[in-house]
Image 1 (cartoon, each protein chain N blue to C red):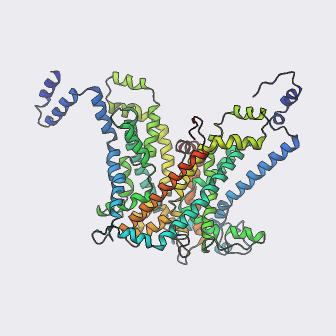
Image 2 (cartoon, rainbow over the protein chains, first blue to last red):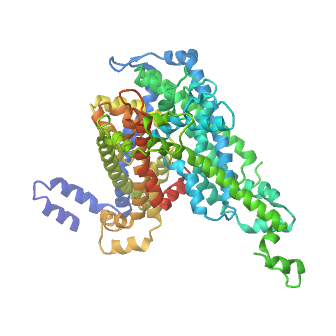
Image 3 (cartoon, each protein chain N blue to C red):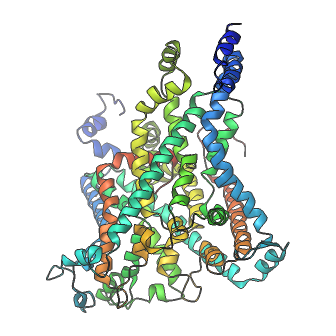
Length: 324
Length: 305
């Protein structure tokens, strides 16, 4: 009744006729309905953004995988042609090989190195903040500047790496210019940033209750035994997360490959995302590039699922109920 | 620690030397172990710092010293002009412009991110609407979507809008809450604000948007700080996005400028190292002053960098 009167008074004004309608609707809603409406309004930017910039592009990319679109001409539907081409493209196999070698090399080593560092730093060392800052520093700088500096580090004649090797009498390889050493070089560079994980490992280590260690040492466990029977098992959830995230991230390496080697020498460091980039923005083969990116996504999903399956055998959560 | 019976002689002795009780070792072994620990840590730190030292050393050398053999570690003379020449000299006059471009992109992107993600985070945190749990899981899911999956359709879309060679493709999406990480942080934070605050505001007749603007936003300063620091580092180092959309040189960002840093005679390493040092320094300085915020951002998601 009151709402209607208010609405009538407002609707005298031509401008607020619509407002009156909404106001009428608004005052007739329950509080829960109003809150729900407000909720949707609040997240509406995200809904628009998701459709326009995430969900929409993903669907479009899927559709585009079945077309050929050089941008200057309109797209033409080509069915499975891209997939057939993919299957016969030797560079696809090469890209997968390069990316896999790099990933299986750098991720486990990074985790072992980072975890060991965190274990060492957890030994009540003096000046922990200083050590932690130094080890974490490489993870703070990233991208182009790091790539550029490491090109200089790897320089076969004048770079610091071969210089130091020469001091101990070894003639170092050509690093980024050698087909055999280019991937190990990039792995080495990624290990430099292995300290980035120490923050996470340290917080995990400090979360292990000391009572367990005390109980173990009463039962006669020495330090080594305590490490492998208590510390490592308790940390497996954290290690697992780092493993999965590391794999996913490693498959997507682009900037270092583009800046340091452009995929060379002779496609020996052709990372997969670099190959996608080449096809999309150098050859303007949009459809083929989309197909390539879906293959990579499927590979990443498959590897992630595989990792989750292996987790049943080696990851221990505290609240587990012996399901295996 | 453990409570030992005072009549236990071993315990009595150990309580004067706690490391003995912990390790059950002779004190020499303990000292050796500590020495080894610091040695290993020191060696590791030394190895980590070598690339930085090498970079700074080269940045202060003359060209002939860069290519000298045996290698020169401490440049003599120290050539500070390298920095001036690399950043503002006649051969490389564009770096200040690139810095301005990068700051422009970073500022407006962060503004959009903070505005939209705080609103969306608020909606997920404190407003009840059907499907909010599922939708939030989708938000979390978008954090896992890699850029290369969406970069091609996005490029085609922005290209057809005529937004190539402008900053719009980099900035505009941020106003639509594309950062799942930011939404997550805001939601976490808002869920911890005590409900009494909201109830009191409602009783005083405050609308939902009033609550957002007058209560929630002023309280969000810690999240703003974390997002600003992490976000600035991201935009400062971002390479692929700018490279796709900014082909005209006057629009380049700092990362593109460094990637294609060339002198007339090819790559001048001392200038390049000077430029690299200069471009790395804001991130390092930010890290030194705001370590806690970096660490906070990392621990929340388990994602580094």
